[in-house]
Length: 489
Image (cartoon, rainbow, N blue to C red; front, side, top):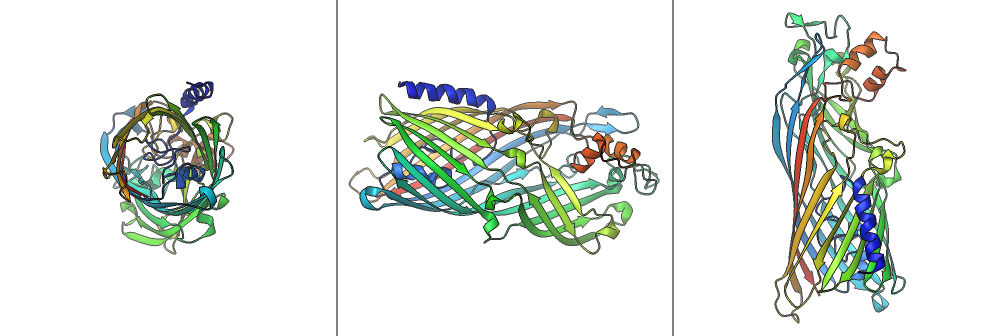
């Protein structure tokens, strides 16, 4: 193995101690894909890598993820200040996705390669639980639909440059509950000491619970939805390539705006019933960097070493705003933050959310079947004390396998037809939170301080952490699969 290859392997293994939860787990990390791999998925990962191929392609893929989540939140007694076992919740979240793409090589000596695609990655979802998790989530999901166009330019035999543009339309459904008594602190009329069915409301009383459903999406055609990708692939040595790409946030904007409706079921103590109004959710989406090194090994094998970084510190919360003429009289606040809790911008926290992987794949050859496998790590994307039913992402291990089978036996037949199947498993060790950033006592302390926003308690209120406790146990396993058909000529 060359010195360049050895160095890349060591660097990736070092980077894996810092790993990343972002992106589509069925591409980039998956076998037969990457920032230096000629594959239609490169339209989104690194357009420059399209130029490494030589055949035109049509590509059809079905993708999906299956998340298994187990959550056991503790209950907090405001009178005694103690925690007790809660109601364990577990469930599976299945989410499909897909991609249709085409790649054409054109120009003099194949110096220009064009690619177009329409894709939707598997959605991020949250458990739909009616009771134990309600102040964090009652279910919902977030997904994007993205048509893309990309081009690779061969500057020389050693360098390919690429550029791509995608329009990301986002769809979000948020469902959650709000403890109206806790939000009012010790207010004698509305707070924890107020009347709920003849007794003080306290914390987590169903009689003082409002339930929200927020359905929003971004515009289908808007400059604020455009994501740009810039990439390069460089040949470092004979049959050794390094690819790097940078993905901008949508529209280079500070925030993405999603608009739609908000339905609120009022607390029973307030008469119940549903009020409806408009809603806007603001979120700051991350930029990201993909990198991969590939090198030819003996016995028709290729080494693949990759990494990904996302600036998830931009996405601290979903900022949900409700607008309705009946909202103020129903005690519905204008703003609610649904906290994600990712690492902040402090050094070196902003560079912690990275992932890396390495593996070996067979090159295409006369035998119709090629296989490959990769192993990797992703670092935690948030501190343990910020773990919640909305975000479970401690440091994890990944294993990916895949096969490509050439269906057309005759190599002279046009088009050649290939079947690709990849599978990935991501294991998140159990997180045991004993001192959570989510603490209902902060809402009480902020009220007692006469809303002195210089205090830590009021800062927690302002940032959305002064809700039900996040103390408890969290466990997650994610499976991801991609089945694709390639037609090449």
